[in-house]
Length: 233
Image 1 (cartoon, rainbow, N blue to C red):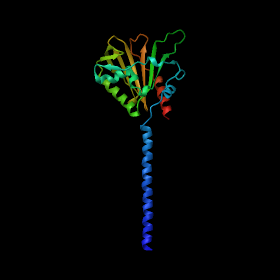
Image 2: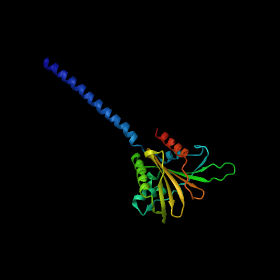
Image 3: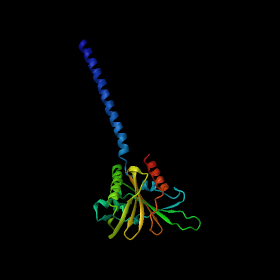
Image 4: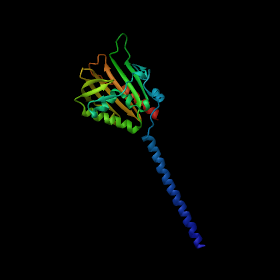
């Protein structure tokens, strides 16, 4: 009886311990899955990108229209490999995962007969993963910091000299980079690249004559980030 009793007690203890181990393992797995769900954001499909990209009516005071896929260009090359992330921003199609990319043209809506003096472009595309999107932002910031004195870039077979690249202050933290870009010929443009999950967005700002730097409006970036965050949620 005593032996049996001991066996029964031991068996019960073993059952309790086994149950505890299973619970612990389940808890670890559950936590890991939860963390993984955050870390392993899936690339948005082309249809999802079209849905979350800025559209007419999203931001008051702006006219927003779709741009056909034929205008997105190919890849870009540089004379200095450390500057390649900047060249990629100029021709981002090569960065898009599975060619999942949409583009928008944005104008300040003219008041009365006033001509629109500023124009903007949005290129929204998928990265392979959240980690890849975050790395793209980090690599770009490093490139802008190290390539400020200029370099050569090749776009569609034509080589251009870049006069300077300037890193601008921004509110984006690790999620974005704001920089000014000037060709040797004097053409001036300003760019913002943002990341959210496994998505990347590039804004381009230029004035009518491409002869001065103009900022990418906060309201455009904020609304785009909000739509991306809503899609993740």
